[in-house]
Amino acid sequence: MDSVRCEPAGPGHPDSPVLALKILVAGGFGVGKTTLVGSVSEIRPLRTEERLTEAGRDVDDTGGVEQKSTTTVAMDFGRITIREGLSVYLFGTPGQDRFWFLWDELARGALGAVVLADTRRLTDCFPAVDFFEHRGIPFVVAVNRFAGTREHTPEEVSRALDLDPDTPVVLCDARTRSSGKRVLIDLVEHAGKVHAARLLADVAPGA
Amino acid sequence: MPYPHRRREPDPGGPPAGAGPGEPPGAQHLRWYDEAAGPMVRPYAMTKGRTSPGGHEFDLIALVVSEAGADGGPDGQGLPAGPEQGLILDLCRGDALPVAEIAADLDLPLGVVRVLLGDLLAAGLIRVSLPVPPALLPDEHILQEVVHGLRAL
Image (cartoon, rainbow over all chains, first blue to last red; front, side, top):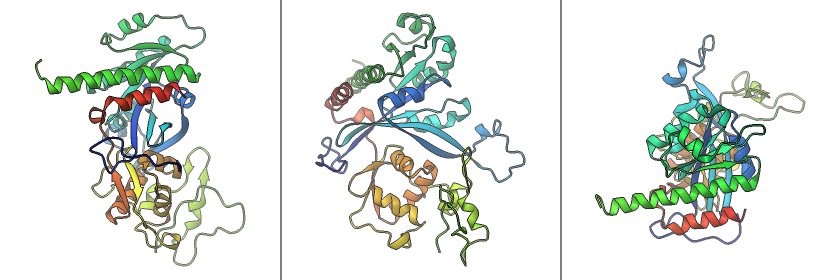
């Protein structure tokens, strides 16, 4: 990062010579989020020390630890440098339900999300699908193919998840870089279309 | 007197270097590190107990850059909360770094980094630029560039 400096990414952001984009990787516990982030990016753990909220208090037994007011959540964090001044950051959302309170912050300003699904436990990805649908965040569903599982077609998965017909469903192998790349490319292309359509709708309301 | 700060690695031997005169009794315990639990010191000790970054919000991908000439002095004595803030200034000198990357680089929890950044911002030692919401991306060329970049990985 010490070679040629790039100029601002575009007009209107003279103070921002670099641009960072955020992509979330979500899905149930053990579905391959860490594997996916690691296959396409330089991955590091990111710790957040969260204050225990009311939401977490029911689950976190703090009996006997009267002082405990924070809990540590580890996320996967990966960076893909597109060029000097343009990077994509991947955040693996915490898999446990009790850390849902972190999702809102993660999702703010995200370009889009990958929802990883395992067809043996498809219900595990329902909450993530709900979350991104409700917040209008573009997402793709990537079915991680585990050895020994029956192949499901994207159409079957799309129907089972009751997805919007425009939401892409792709089959992937989270362990391989080429497959992970494909998923991200599909997401960025999809997100581009969704954002462009929204811009158009803003320009010509009711059209 | 700045608070003693956490060390991640246990001392290889010899008497603990902490617990000097004027430091709280038991300061050597700050050197404790547990494989499973991580550092055995409350991370917010570093922020003097503060958990809120002074009214500022720091998005995970907000970009931080040190102001020209920002310097915490030797051992960070001139910084509001001590040496970690000096490390942040060093990291963000020249190249802007997102908040999440600072936390990962320093292996500090995000919440702690945000408080430290709040001090630095208030002291005029850093500049922070907000991330551009995807809807306001300058043009679609950026996304095309990302797609090309991903293909080339």
